[in-house]
Image: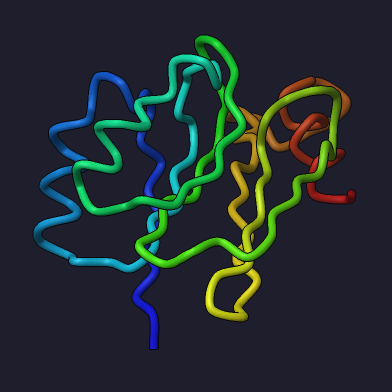
Length: 129
């Protein structure tokens, strides 16, 4: 059995200490992060490894979006989809034979009307794909 947790971290680099606390309290095998808000070149791989997650895949963007899967177990394969434009909102990894998908779905704003709210239209377009 694997314990998998997911967290909309809303900027990984400024919440590394909270990631450490989550890791210590929940003791998950796999952590799925959304809204990492960092480009791949600046992803804190060493810090993540120091928490015991030697295996990771990530897709990042500066300032917004970005997803990651951190694992204590080897990652057998990985892939990602670009559902809507080039936003980094999906990544998948197979771990111990289980295909784990990590999605960061657009929020859509306050008005649930695609005619008047472009953010809501973007969310619907993302989910339809």
